[in-house]
Image (cartoon, rainbow, N blue to C red; front, side, top):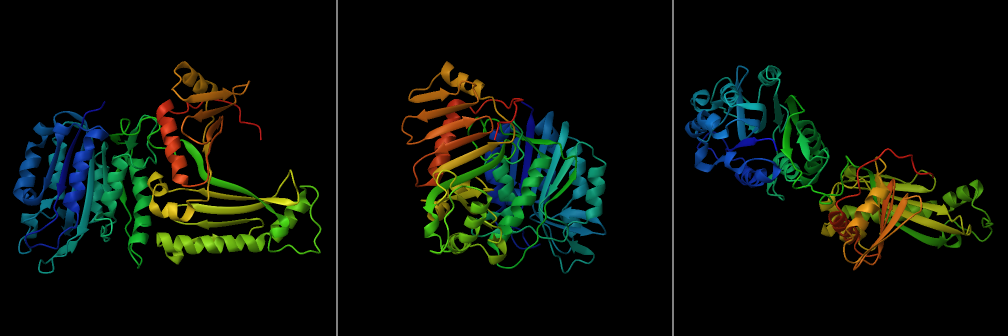
Length: 485
């Protein structure tokens, strides 16, 4: 494992320079506790907060940092506080920064970079969560960072990466209902394995993947946290391939399922049979289909249009009330024949009505929930309130085919108690049943289907997480021909 060291500085309160930075100390303390599980040596992780954030203490810590960190692959430095610039030169405000003499009582960004250069680190990740500091009585002081110095600094450092919580001129927001800084909160969830977007199969989290997650998650949380529009765009400078964390211990087999790097599509699904005669658009003068042909499909699309709209209207009001979405957060459409959808920041809900191929006078209702924001959302009380009795299937579509035979061999070589497995003759599909689970797991080269009783759909997720943990995953992707449709 690569050696990693970290320095975290949380300047939450100022003697006189500016207002507090809410939750900064708690956020960084939580990150400090979490770093050892992300591949950092606990003895080489330091946190400065409270009375230890004066300029003298910070400069003293930086002076001792080369000896403290030793020789490492990655040095991770995070500063949370406030910043200003004078004639294009950037400064990080310390707890004892004063308005009459701001530049002499703050830490110059150039001095910070110079100190970090002295550490024997192959790569340096400098993360800056700095709100603009307004010093009205200090002539020439501008709030926030001047971008030119930042760009020039990282351009001259090929093995460095810089991650900023916002663009120059913007501020970094906190969410009072979450009791944390928004950018810091999403940084923490990535470094603790609560999300797995962009994490490599070996558990490596690179700066590029972390930045992409922050760019996606921060605006979404802003929309939820504030009634008015707020802008906060995370920034990246320098080398985006710097590996910031090793999450392999946190993300062992089966510990996190909603992995965009592995899955093409994840869907909760419900399928129900109904009669064409029960659709709102049916009239007694209509002739019922006798075969599932194109005419029958078009007829069902027309006849079910009002029912689809009613379904969407009901679901729309429920998700608005339970999840607190604003109107602009939702995209609703029932215009396409036989299909309607609702898109939200956390999921996409679709409903379709199709003619039943086995009994053309009946229809099959299918409801899918896809584009899920994460496992935590599925486990939430709101999710249970809205979708608790709807779904009885959980479908995973692999981005690359998996080796079903290898998966079955691993089970049979060390069969856990209470497990039964059956496999097709060509080893292209398998069915696994688990003692205590009133359902089954079907595995093909391209999909996994978990079927269970209707109820709390989150239980399907929990069952499958336990399933993966027990069997150590679904085998490595293998070059297999695509399954026939």
